[in-house]
Image 1 (tube, helix red, strand yellow):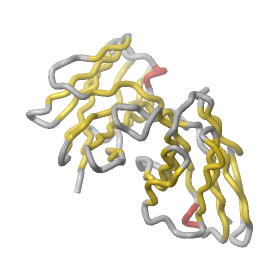
Image 2 (cartoon, each protein chain N blue to C red; image 1 turned 45 degrees about the vertical axis):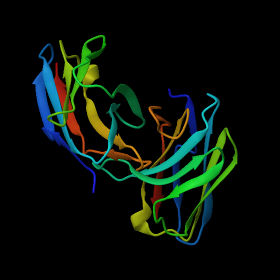
Image 3 (cartoon, rainbow over the protein chains, first blue to last red; image 1 turned 180 degrees about the vertical axis):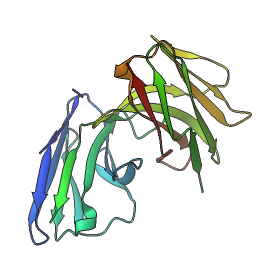
Length: 114
Length: 111
């Protein structure tokens, strides 16, 4: 088990649904990340929060909306997704934003959009 | 654009064998190279390498970086079935603010 906790583990949603993915860490890390991983591909960066402020948005469609309520929590709000958005969504954290600080990943949420 | 290439793409060996996984990179303003192991879900951190020629070791796993030739290797000795996983290499560059991942090497250990 990792020290980064993601919920839910699995999610099936329709294209008109609104859902949220949650991520929590209590390691005192000040940078948190969302990655998307398709089958047999490496993780692709979506968003980076550094000290609770959004510092990187990798041109992600607006149907994905990140939120960082505090330094321990990271949410990803989903609305009007497409079937091609089905993937493993990984949350990660690091002590600081990169700068010789390795990422610690959660186990991910496996999302299926029907 | 930063680029990370891993080889081989997949590898099947018998338990007890030694394997070497390769990672080459083209990165402007290289900062560090990281190795991760991904079994079914979360990639787990193995090593971070920043200096050439200094081997990092953890049990049966070891890794070394060559900044002149722009590559790193990950060695696993006396492999076990629990070593079966995808091994990901990623590099970080100064001023880029994100990790660039390779496509990974899928390692399968046959009992």
